[in-house]
Image (cartoon, rainbow over all chains, first blue to last red; front, side, top):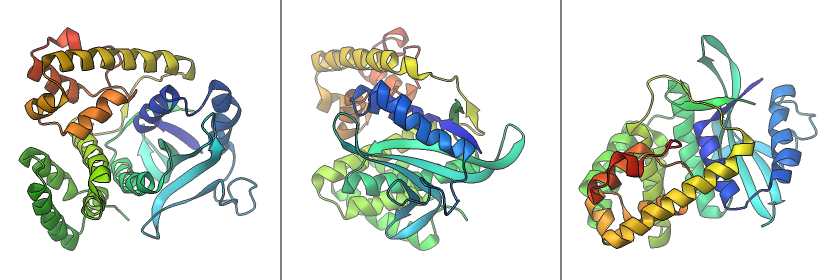
Length: 142
Length: 163
């Protein structure tokens, strides 16, 4: 599956990097390889060692309801600050550059806390609608 | 399946907007937020969260909504492909952005401070605080508002990495 780096992902990575949430080693050895799994593996495979483990991957939810097309990649006690890092991902079939296919859109990365989680889930719904509408910016593919 | 606001959600949105007005948020902010909330269900969700939150968290929600307002003002009509930023460049860009914002913050403090800037730009104070404290590339919309308020020139506020 094609994996799109959205503007939201870039901007959040910039801020997380500047705040020391992850190091270059974390990025090269953990973050990037994990997200690259979306390119090669099936995130809906019930037997996949990573995607079938709710500790590392799961649907995004808001007020107990699954947000359609919305997913979260999760890292626990991550980086120098041992934070709960999350990356919102939208998987949906859309047209881009003249081709209609299912793609994974990397969206906002953030450090989870209860309030932030609620706000990010609300904002993920806005991002999904923008991806459906085609009113978003992207920086390329991984 | 879409994430657009329903009619009943819109009615509730207007009620919360009245509470926002009573809390002292500016008419411009509320009007812009309501306009977005009439379309995006996620904005409606942020309104609901604001209603159910205490003061500190409300400030964060106002900042979130303000960011969505500015993003909508610069929103492309179709997917916009911007140049790739490589990981090796993230640190340098982040440091450039932080340095620039620090400089701008100093200018703002000399000019009269964040409260005065919030009033002059119409940008809620929590949003300005988040803006100055983040390494995310600044939006031109935000930079222009600050420049106009403080009578700065284009070259003083727009760097090559403006989002």
